[in-house]
Image 1 (cartoon, one colour):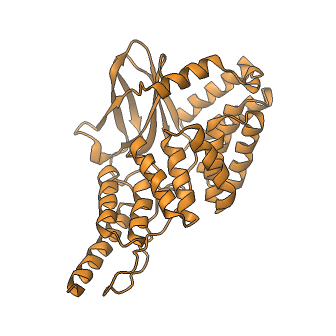
Image 2 (spheres, one colour):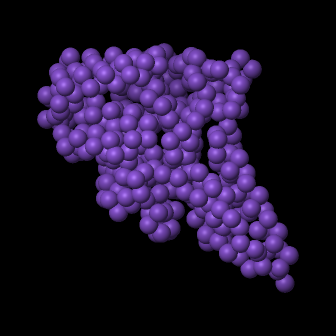
Image 3 (cartoon, one colour):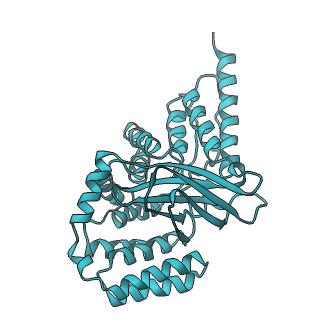
Length: 347
């Protein structure tokens, strides 16, 4: 999973209002933007309820800002992850018959009960699109995947276990071992790129994602991640084709829509940016890319202060423990000041 670059928040000029300095509202795309909350809790538990229930299934959890990955069986309608560092996570639930349901979860003190447990409900995606994608995945295997040996797959499985135990270096060594055994292992190349991205090594991440796509040009994950790596290098023209392709491949993906919206934002095409950022919010309102912040800036540029305030309020409600919340509050104070100035100057 790759995350694009930050933006700054500026309000569009309105009559009778002095110019405001940028609030420096970071939109969660810089490394560590969704870092651990300021809570005093060392660890928290995530308790999940799945609807409808599954006879068998798996829940997979990965940290937004660090190479952390764990799995848990889904028993009926329940799953649990214990002793998690506070922060943002991507939760994926595998329904064997229908495919993946993905959402962002905030495992932070504001959402925890007195026993340090964060409860989340997952409504399984059983749409026709998800079903068709699952059938296609089951019936289609790329040439690159056919060349991957069981030994290489076992190395990746062990790497995931190492990440879950905090052994980052050991996990990376196992990922390198996997691609040495099977050079066409697209998943392993993509995971190496993700690790590099989260460490802020964007050029290195780009190389890994391009290697993955070289072996399987139709693989979605390295495609959308390459678009994010290029955005993080301010290469907006280079990124656009990859982000367009990723959104076309997965029109329901929150990440693909958000990255495309951000790409259009930095190219100054705000109407297109708004369209895809709204789609990202529909797919995953709490997405770690904070589409609300980019929408707030777009509305601010257009002088739509109420709409900008609404987006910032929503962001603060969904991410109360994020390091960017104080910056969002500063932006809200600017909006209130701007609205007061406008009211005083109105006929």
